[in-house]
Image 1 (cartoon, protein in one colour):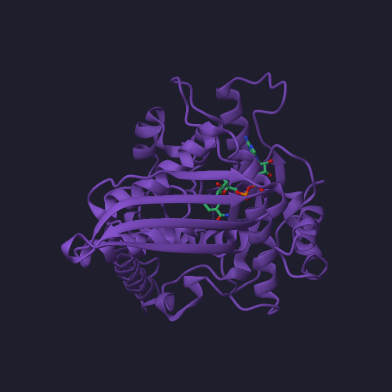
Image 2: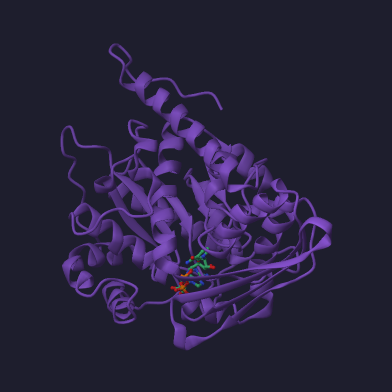
Amino acid sequence: MSASPSVSVPGAAPRVGVWLIGARGSVATTVVAGCAALTAGLHTPTGMLTETPLFAGSGLPPLTSLVFGGHDTTDCPLPKRAEALAAGGVLPHGLPAAVGAELAAADREIRPGGPLPGETRTPDELVAAFTADLQDFVRRRGLARAVVVHVASTEPAPTGTAPPPSSLYAAAALRAGCPYVNFTPSTGLDHPALAAPAQSAGVPHAGRDGKTGQTLLRSVLGPMFAQRALTVRAWSGTNLLGGGDGAALADPAAAAAKNAGKERVVTDTLGTAPEGRTHIDDVPALGDWKTAWDHIAFDGFLGTRMVLQTTWQGCDSALAAPLVLDLARLLARAHEAGLTGPLPELAFYFKDPAGEAPSALGEQYAALAAFARRLRAGARETTAPGTAHGTPEDR
Ligand SMILES: NC(=O)c1ccc[n+]([C@@H]2O[C@H](COP(=O)([O-])OP(=O)(O)OC[C@H]3O[C@@H](n4cnc5c(N)ncnc54)[C@H](O)[C@@H]3O)[C@@H](O)[C@H]2O)c1
């Protein structure tokens, strides 16, 4: 089914596309349902920094201007997916029905991804097909731009030189001139074959792997131990989760990609690699609800041995969705402002940030606040009397 042609409303904010790779997954479904719930005034934007005074006047696209679409390899309709999430307590009871029209509209904009079972298309043909879908979305819906956000199942790190599926989608984003966010540990834009196209595409990008729970806590606690001159001897962690993410991470190769990011935050913030590993266990009965336990053994004065244990119990998609909405708006605004290349200013959101970025959450927040100020200054220029189109800010 094709969507109705867009009608531009005079004076309305330009419409901005959010193209989700993995558009029928838990995170993507929560993003679409959540945005509709916020714009209808049914819920407050808890967890979204872009709805706080930090970003007031920064020229971000309003939530009402966002148009959703994407790729997925499964065909379960979005309204049905939302019902399943509500049954699991991830979405509030009644929300799928309340935002049924918006879920159905986004579902009409989801195109088959790839590689599909029995795939016969070559990687080049897949990139061409993905690019054409994106260009068609932007043209048909009359969008000012579309941000591609990768939220598909975590894939194992590639072993050969062939780009994995996440990198084919990233290549399509570059080819279509779209800003790109990798919210997963998958390779995406970080494949060597994409280094040159990424430089020449002239689009902003950010990633990799959203920092929503255990790693968020680690990026606060690591600097605390370092700044208090307490010696961390061992830092061990276990994650129990179910849902699609839990099932994907039951593959040791996929889990290795995820755990590498979690362990890197500890090493980077402490400045040394303590003993201890991070594990992920798939527990299907838990669904989207994750329990993350950290056990930190450290030395105090005179070598006195102590332990800090933390238990984080979170709903993964409810933690991730507000960040995805933030990132889509920030990348859209960065693109509008003429920014290109990696945005280390957005390290606050990621386990493994693009470009040179601090690893402590406090410093990352300061960088984000500076970014907000820069966007605000640019937005003022754009709207200043006598300024026809504004000036792209310098990086
Ligand atoms: N929720 C969090 O807190 C969080 C934090 C950081 C990163 N992530 C990452 O976000 C991703 C999505 O998580 P989720 O819970 O929504 O998982 P999910 O299993 O519910 O959804 C993943 C979706 O990706 C689709 N998919 C798989 N291969 C594809 C392909 N080749 N092309 C297009 N679509 C494809 C699946 O069909 C599915 O609909 C995972 O990689 C996860 O690690 C989540």
